[in-house]
Every structure is written in C-alpha cells, then in structure tokens.
Image 1 (cartoon, helix red, strand yellow):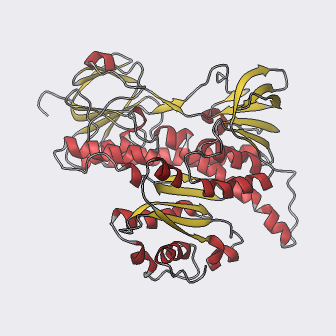
Image 2 (image 1 turned 90 degrees about the horizontal axis):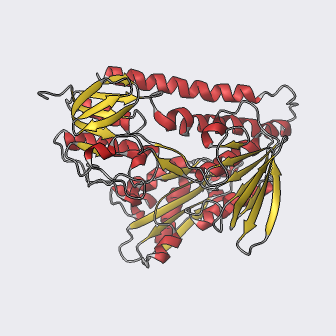
Length: 463
C-alpha cells in the first residue's frame, strides 16, 4: 500500500459498497467507504427495508378481517398511518446503525461526504479533501427514473422515495409502472383502504415474471378492488387544487381521463454515474452504465464498478455479490467470474408473493430452448389450507433429456422463502429426483416444492 492512504476506497455505502468494504477488510486490505447520506444506501433507507416494514404492517391490518370472523370487534377509528410510517423508519434506522457497527467492527473507515474520482488512484471530496487508494470502487447506486411531463414534486407526483415518506395516505392513487415496486405499493396502499389504479404499458403486470404466476396475483388484486390498466400509457397530466387528472391511452389509441389525489411513478431507475469523475479517467458509460469485465473491473486498472451503475439486474442482493467478487479479485483471490443471470432470485412481496429464478416460459420459447415443465398447486400442501392461503403453485422448468433445472417459479404464501430450495438444487447441480426423494417436514409449504419435483418424475402423491 506504499504511497496510498488505502488499499481500497469505495464511493457509496449501499448494499454493494459496504459489503465490498467489509469483504476487502476481511481479506487483509485497508478499506474505506465514502457516503454522502446514511450508510445502507437506497435499499436500506428508502427501498427494500422500509417498504417491507410497510408491507408487514399492511398485512397485519388486512388480518383484522380474520379477527372479526372469530367474533372479535375491532374499532378502526383510531388508526393513524403515521404510526405505520414511524415503524418503517425505525426499522431502517436500526439497520443503518447496524451497518455502521459492522463497518467499525471490520476496521473499515467511514468517510462522510460526497466524493468524485479526480485521478486514477485519487478521489476528492466536496470540501476539497483528497484521499488516495490502490483500488477505487464505484458503488454510487441509482435513483427513481422520471418520465416526460411527470416530474417528481413529491406532493402530487411521487417517486418511490416520496411514497415511502408519506405520513398520510391519499384516498386515491394512480400508480404508473407495474413492476415489482408498483405492485408492492399497490398491495400496501390497497391494504390501508386507498383506492388504487395500477397502469402498465406492457400487456400484463409484472411482465418479466411467469405469466401463470402473474395471473394468480392479478386475480387476487381484482378481488381486492385494485383497478389495473395494461397495454396502457399515461400521456399527459394536469394538476389541480385537489389532485391530478391524467390522460391514459391504450394501444388502440382510445383515451380516458383518470383523477386521483396523487400519482406514483415507478417506471425504473437511473444509474448515478453523473458528476462522479468518470471523465477524469477516460471512462465512458454505455446506455448509462459503466462497462466492466468479468470481475467488475473497468478499463482503467484499479477502478471497479458494482451495483446499479453496471448493466446487471438492479437488485440489492446482486450488488452485494458483485461487491464480494470485486473485493476478492483485488485481493488476489480467484472468485467465480461475474454472476450467472439464471441463478439470480427475484422476489415480489405482494399478497400472494411471487418468486423466481432462471428461465420463465416466455423467454424459453423466445430463445428456442427445449424445455418441459411440471407444477404443483399450493392447496395440495396441507399447511396452505390450514393457514387459509391455498392459492398458488410451484412450477419448475427442466431439460427434457437431462432433467437439469432451467428455472423455477412460485406464487403464494412465503414464495420468496421457498424459492431458495430450488435455487440451491440448481446451484449444486442436483436433479428433481434429489428433492423429490428428500423427506420434508409435514405440514409445511415446502412440501409443494417436493411434490413439484415428484411431478417432474411423474409420481406426485397429492396432486
């Protein structure tokens, strides 16, 4: 480290940055991380963690109906959404402090401030202070993407951050974008009594997920009174004293005006690659992303990029794994190159939940991949009936010749937990028969995984 302040300096303390810093320190490197806000990044502070806290509270609120069925009387008049918001912030704050503790425990120096690359081995903070490092990691994350004519003001037009910071809910909200974030906010808002209208440009909500799994969720949303307009786009908006009026247009060109108190725009995220000094070292972005090699190294030796600034799925768990790979590479280890995109789990925390990895059917057909499939309904697993959540299924796509697992999809209660047994099987190169013959505790929802694998072999017991 002769001549440098640090072996590695990371710009950004999100799930990619702080994990990279800790892993680097574990491998004997002197590490520091620069953060302009709270450690933990978007995910921990204004993303996955507070949103899951809201979802937990929403599902508790929805359970009131079950209590009433048991003869209990519940008075909702005293309900104050502010308490729900406060709980979400408490969860985020606790975990942010936890990350600070982990950085300190692992002897990672935390530098508060905003930094930009000012040379191949140097960063400069806004206050003019400089720091040098043998390796620099760009982990500056992303921000909500705006669309023309729908600029965020966080009053009438909300980003996901603005929606998470609401202390009072609207009576009606229009949500533009039916990806995971839009679907999860639809679930939250509807649970607390907000009238929700969800709009998606493509032909179904969650367009990247398994179509059959999405049908289960869409039916649930319809029963709950969530209005969904697919193959539809928002073309204009007019703000008024009481709310907004939005003109929607479908693929046939038919238009209608929808009024709401607020609009939530969740149509993707934009990488934070501006004003971080890429031009100082000759790095040019491609479609807004930093080009990287197999171990997330840029074309400039000693400079790496991970997380939402590179062209991989914008997911916290992906950023963390990329941080580990980059740290191990700069420490002279031999990590596996990149990440197999078919081994990245996806999770949507709606009710029912949706989880997946690998190929969905539509992509297998598109890529002309030979596949067979087998599925098992949740209601065939006794626990799903016992807990009154029988809707859903587990599906596996596999190679018809080798039985290799190509992808798996689950929709239903705790699907985001169940998917990992299937993913472990694929990662360990197990075959369906290995899970089919493994004893699963009864009654558990994981029995649906076992039975789906038995279905591959043609001998599901409870189908």
